[in-house]
Structures are given as C-alpha cells and as structure tokens.
Length: 143
Image (cartoon, rainbow, N blue to C red; front, side):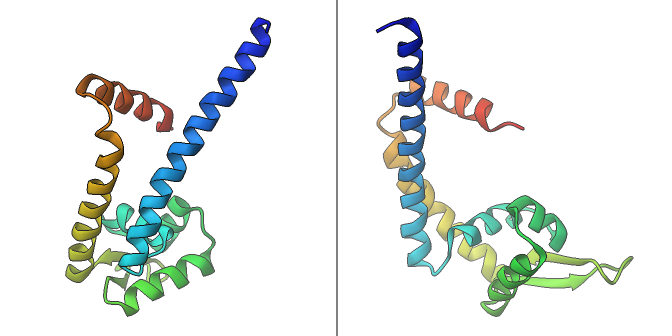
C-alpha cells in the first residue's frame, strides 16, 4: 500500500468513525424524543430557545427551515403549551418566540436524559481523553 492509499484509508476510517458516532448520538436523541413526543428538530429548537428569545426568522435560519416549516414547528409546540409567540413592539410583522415555564420544565428533563445517555458513550474515555475529545469536537464545529 502506498502513502496515497494509506491516506485514503485513514480518511475513510475517520469518516466512518464520525458517522458511527453521529448514529449513536442520533439514536439517543430519537429514543428520548420518542419518549417525550419530540422530533429531533424539536429537540434542536428547544436547545436554541432554552436561554433566549428569538424571532421566527432567526429560528428558521438557525434550523435551516423555510417560513412554512418553522411556522408549523412553532404552532405544534405552542399547542402543547411549550412556547409562546408575541409580536414585536417596534414592528408588528416580526414575531418573537420564547419558551414557557412548561417548556423550560420539559427542557430540563429532556436535557438531563440526553446528558445521562450520552455520558454512557463518553464514560468509555478517561479524563484526559475526554478533554482532548471536547477540544477537538469544539474545533470541528466552530464556524
């Protein structure tokens, strides 16, 4: 095997590892989401909104959704009493979304469950490996 073949094999292995890790985390999110009747996109929505209030447009941009999709997503959460919408004081066309107390309670419970399940994956690492993993993951996901 020449150097080029080794590099290709290493990239495939890295890709494979990242994909497998992604599948593990997606599996956790799917299982917990199903338990609390939340889709992965709803889990992402609450992850974004948990500590701030955003406009519908900002949420659509964060989640990569079009206007009708974000409207449906927020409407479903609003029907469950998890979020509320309000018009901007300065521009009535702008709608702000914030999490209700019930939504915050659900976020706390779901976040705790996700953390507990993900910890079973990361507990296989020692402290030094965990610190390295976090540093590398942070570097990869930075814009």
